[in-house]
Structures are given as structure tokens and as C-alpha cells.
Image (cartoon, rainbow, N blue to C red; front, side):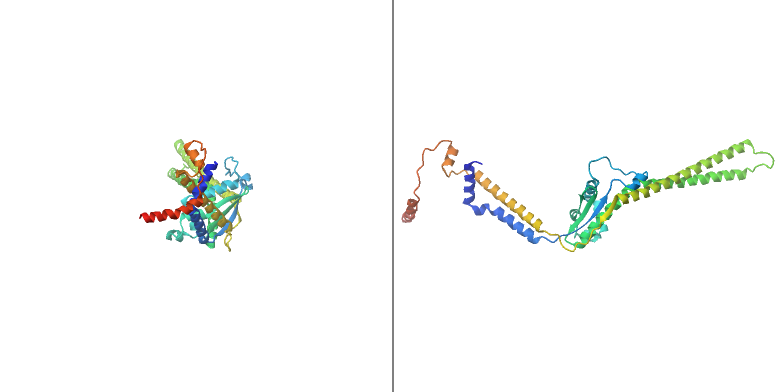
Length: 338
């Protein structure tokens, strides 16, 4: 910044300092109002351990591995929790588990309030901290607990949903195969009863062929029924193995506790005041710069040289004392003329 511009800014400011200090005064007033009107906040949180591999997954055929990534399990899990908090369904589940449905229905609390009070952050590579901060210690405790429980339940449900669906599919298929097996057995029994074996000799060849065909149909239906039952049982076993695997992958290390004292807010208050003061100072500087930019008056020798782009050879000084002595004569002369 040139010397002329700096002098011009200072002259602009000191001509009406009370006007240009209005943004700073307003910022200080807003900071004081914010600090004095802030409520105490109570924070409750728990720590969840997340592992990418377990002994059960190595011993069994259950594989729930994520794609290759450089991110740690804690960072992936914390990001997923924060993403889930942006969805309406998960937030409603958390609110219901925390017993805050009545507060939501009455308008005392909104879904956005739940989203802003709950957060997750990685602590190392395998630990995730889930916290809730509100003005009510009981609400903070219940929200932290509800978030952890809802997330673990969601992870388990997502992991076992495919196995559960497969088990239900094979159960329905086994019921159909059982009906077909019963029908095949009944057809075979009815044919044997209607066509009794002769006392002497063997059955006719057509009866033997029919019995063989019905027996094969019964055997086929029985194999289908047994296969469906085995696959349904295998799907249920995989679901249970998956559930146990998730229990080993995701478990609560530190459960949330009921906060008995509010969070220290001195640091937050100082940061708020400093931020608002900086905003006020920026407003003052912007206002002074704007006023100086629109001020086209010439006040000194440098201003004349900059405006006219010609050098000044000399200047006539003003005798301030003579000017002060002549001012009463001007007023007196103006009064006589009137």
C-alpha cells in the first residue's frame, strides 16, 4: 500500500471515527449477547471397537470383507455413522430408542437437532468415539446410547439380511417340495393298492414299469425336499456365524455415562468473541476503504500531484493565527450587512 493511500485511509477514518466504528461496536455487542445467552452443554459419549478381521471369519466361510482401501476401520465406520445421521430413517430410529418421539411430535426437538448433537470421530485405527452434546444431561446420555445400539443393530441386520432371506426362500421351497413328496408317495401307495401283486408269478411288465416310475418320482421329490432343508439350515448357520462375527468385529469398549457437570465453555466463548471481533474489524476496514474510494476531494500536495499528474513547484503556507483573528470580523461584518 502506497503512502498516499495509507494517509488517505487514515484521514478518512479520523474524520468520522464514530461512524466507521459502528460495525466493531455491533460485533462486540453480538459477542457479549452470545456469550451471556449461551446455555450449559452436557456431553456424553462412548467408544466402539471396530475390527476388519476376526478369528471366527478365519475359521468359517463367512466373508464380510470391505474392498481394498487405505482407510482405517475407525475412519470408515465413523464416516458411515455420520452419513447415516443424515438419513431420516436412522435418525428416527435413534430418536425412538432414546425415547424422544414425544419431543419430536411436540416440536420441542427436530431431526436436525438430533443430527447436530450427535457425531462420530475416529480414535486411532480401530476405535470410534460416538458423542452427544445437549443442554440436558439425560438427553445426551440417552442419545449416545441409542446411537451406538442403533448402529450395531443396523450393521448386524445388514450383514445377516441376505442369509436370512436365503433361509426363508429355502424354507418356502422345502414346503413346496414336501407337498410334492407327499403327492408322489400317495400316488405310489394308491397304485400299489389298486394293483395288488399276484399270488403266483410276477407282476405284469407294465405294472413294474409304473411302480418304478412312481418310485423314481418319490425319490426325486424326497431328494429335493432334503436338499432344500439342508440349504435352509446352511443359510441359518451362516446368518448365526455372521451375527457372531459382527459381535466380534463391533463391540462397545466404553459405554456412555450420565454427565454430571457441563462442558467447560471458556475456550468456546473466547473463540466466539475473537471471531466476532475480527469480523467487526474487517467491517471497519471495508467501510473505511469504501468511503475512501468514493472520496474524490483533494486535501494535500500529494493529492494534487496524483490527481493532476503535474509537479508542484511551491505552496503558500496558511497563517493559522491570522485566520483565527479574522473569523470574528467576518461574523461581525456579516451581521452588519444583515
